[in-house]
Length: 318
Ligand code: BEZ
Ligand code: FE
Image (cartoon, rainbow, N blue to C red; front, side, top):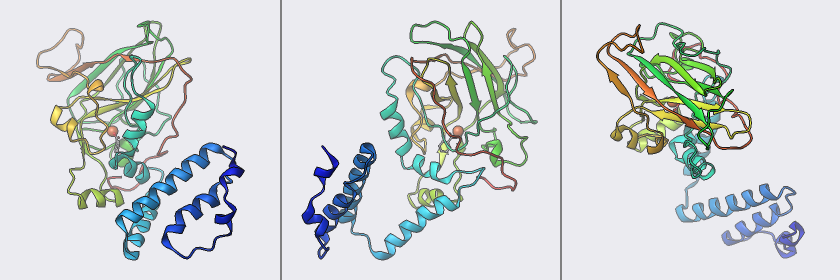
């Protein structure tokens, strides 16, 4: 429909006198938006928010509290912590957007949340190198596999960007005791499409709870835990970029994921080795291995804007 037709002169000239006039008046005022998608999104947003307000009928005090909560999301965000991403995650918004845009129906690997801890620009690791750049206690962990297309053929020149929390449950950007870029690395596949990283076994960890998202979790009596996982961004020319996480935890922990990010399709099989193994001659027992192949679908590579860019200078958990 032409945007001019969406404007109603009667509404344009109306001076509001009743509650039921507000929504049509606002929709009419926004009907001149040039960008059709912005017009559609904002009209729907106003219809739904106004309906929510009519349903819950917030008091002025509650409205003020809500606005302050949103303000504090921004105020709590800095170069090493992103509270707005965290809030979208604990409300299930990020997972809903993820599933709408990535249904995995062509046989490609399922995606998962980027989360608030992706920094970008990680150092390059050669095949088999460790991403533990400072002394990181914890059992040794080896993860390897292949990147293929939907046809099963290896993808040469795929980039894997990998990051994980330490066994203390902190990403290096949250923890002054870890070296810059600890447990982060980038690897490029060769002609066989293979990748192989050495690391420490990931553990489940609590999301940061010092800010407004944490206050909400507390008020809702929710457990702020994420199941153990490793993050990957797998990209290659001619393929849609895959943002995902491989989970190495039990069913209960996955079902209880505070950000609703765990999916059955991206559950990796963690193998415990209690005896030395010829393929891992230097590994100290017990150690853990996981083999996981990534399947990319055709498309144009795109790259997320990192939610954070640096490392915290002070000791706090976010
Ligand atoms: C993460 O996996 O890094 C994460 C995702 C969502 C919220 C908090 C952390
Ligand atoms: Fe994570």
